[in-house]
Image (cartoon, rainbow, N blue to C red; front, top):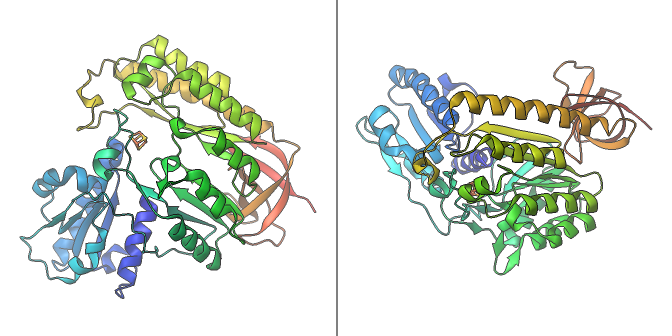
Length: 422
Ligand code: SF4
C-alpha cells in the first residue's frame, strides 16, 4: 500500500514538473513514506530521518517531508524530536503536497496536515509507475475492523472504496503501459463496496479486461470471504490461485481478544473449501505469537491450524504493543523469552510446510511469468507461477514479461527450480 501511495505522490509531483533523483544529495525535496504497523518500522524511520538531517545542515533550502501512518500517529513526538522536518502529511492529505512544496518554508515553520477524510480515495489520480511486470492499484482505503493489536484504523481512517469504473480505467491504463499483472490493494480488500457493488463484481469486471494476464489481490479478511468469492476464483482463470489468508492466531479466546471476528473452525472450514475448489491453490498467512494472555495451550492451537492447513508461506511476528490500540491496554503477560521461543518453533514448522508444499510441484509443468535476472546468476531468470511461487531457470532468449512453460525439477526453501519446456 505504501509503495502505491509513493507512486501516487510521485505522480502528483511529476504533474508539477518535478523530476526524480535516486541520490539524496542531489534532491531539493526528500519525502519518507512511513508505516506504523510495527515498532521496528518506526525505529527505522527515526534512524533515517537522523541521517537526512545532514542534507538539511548542508543546504537549509532542502525540504524534508514525512508522509503516511507515522505522520498521522506520531506528529507531536516528531515535532519535538525532529524539528527540521518541514512537512508532516497524513495519508489523506497528499493532494496538498504540490502546493506546500512550492511555498518557501521558514526554518521555524512546520507544515502539519493529518486530517483524516471519510471520502478521499484519490480516485482521479493515477500514480507515476516505473516500468515493470506487476502494477499495484489501490481499490479502497482505511479499515473498519478494529483488530485490537492494529493501529491502521487510527492512522488510515474509515473504510471507503473507489468506483469500479475508475479502477477499470486504471487497469486499462496499466495494460496499455505494458504491465502484465495487476495487484488490487486494500487494508481489507474484500470489504470493498461502492454504490452497492461488492468485491466479487469488481474482480469480474477486472477479469473481463483484455490483455491483463494475471490478477492478484491483498489482503482479504477471513470474515468477508464467502462461497461467492471462491466461485469467482473458480470461474475466472485470470485470478491467480494464490490467496493471502491472515490467520493471526489459532486459539478462539486469543482471536476474540484480538477482535478478529472468526473462530478457528470457521477459518479451517474456509481454508479447506478454498483448497477443494481452487485448483493448485497456494495459501499464505500472517501469524502473531505472544499476544497478551497467550498461553502455551493457545499457542498449540495456532500450531494445530498450521498442521491442518500447511500454509505455503507465512509472515510470522512477535507481538509488539502499538500505543493507541486497544491491546496496548492489556497486560503484556508473555515473557520475551517465551515469545522468542514460540516464534522459533513456528518458523521451524513453517519451513517444513513450505518445503512440503513446494516439493508437491516437482515434475509439474507450469506457466511462469519471467520477472528479472536471478539474484545468483545472470544466466538464469527469476519468474513467478500463478500460485505466487518463485521459480529459477536457465535463460533461453526470453525477456521479462514473457510467459513460458517450465517443468519444476527441484524445490529448496521458498524457491522452485525448473527447466523450460517447449
Ligand atoms: S483488518 Fe485488522 S489487521 Fe487488518 S488493517 Fe484492519 S484492523 Fe488492521
